[in-house]
Image (cartoon, rainbow over all chains, first blue to last red; front, side, top):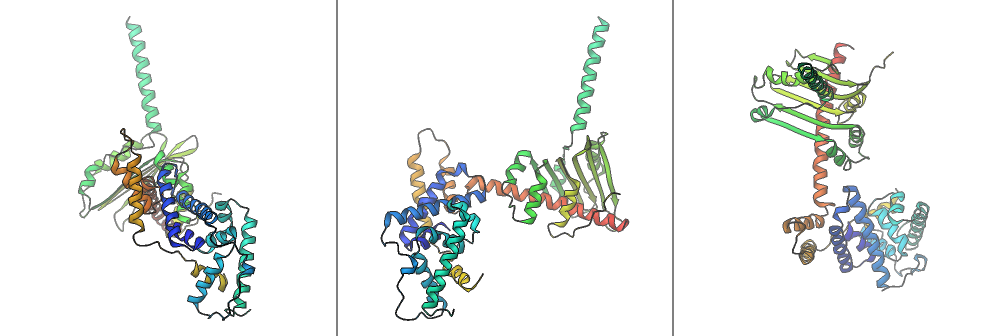
Length: 150
Length: 182
Length: 98
């Protein structure tokens, strides 16, 4: 779970493994403060989110590009799952940090907007707005690529 | 001198009697010395959970799971759960003395037997005893004795019989509607 | 959930780290735990390593979690036994007094 959050957020396997190792080390140091299984799960997610965002800011390998500015490919996308999955992952990776993490927590971890808001310490309205806007933009991009009919 | 000695003895006896009564009244938790049955059982369950273990376990119960949510609510007011369940391959393993050992601990006035059922079908005897203090149930004992089985379930604390009955609606058991008192 | 959300769930399904990840992390944690040990040990070395291994295995709170899980299973079993007995009693009483 920890590795996967970092990997989908950063799209970099090595960095994601470093982050996961760091998170588990932190967990070991903080074992005494863990109250329950649910608390442990919440704690792991929260730290994974924080470390992933920190790593992204430090790295700054690729400048943040608004989803609207992602160039359209010349060729039309093949409407089959393997291509679509990779396309979606690349599109998600171009989102700004906060909506990117919101999307990962929603669709990888299947968390409700209220749980995401609690985890990321942002208002639930902001979470819903990020979800709505990101989905709308993704749809638009995919329609333009011919992956899906409107 | 004799009068003083007699007074002192009276005080001691009265105090001992008061302690005994208090102990009997407060003894919602039974002493279950049934290890000899465990040694002869083909299958046995031995559960002893005091208040701190119950509260600790409660933290790990998932409020979103209906069964676990129901149990979490029930154990909130419970001080202890003690269960001894034995199944035997042959008949005649447990004795009347084992039954009496349990029943004798519920002779105090606060205890009353509210259910007594004898099943002709399987020869099983079932009793439910309840300890009532100041209008509140503070202890429940379910005692089941059959030809090849012996079970004592002792629940200590603020036990809601309605909630216990409600358990029948969980764990895949059919729910029975309770008749409301007129 | 619509088609896009289904596709997103597929595209973002959990990925596993490399096969030797667990071994590397366990080794790192053990090294760190041993390096942090003082002459007056606060806990036995084997317990520290076991706790580290449990943490890496994603068991959450390690030993404490394990204890809590065991206690929870006992509570559930106790309630099942008591509940099933009580339910049977109710059935029998209902049969006698419908």
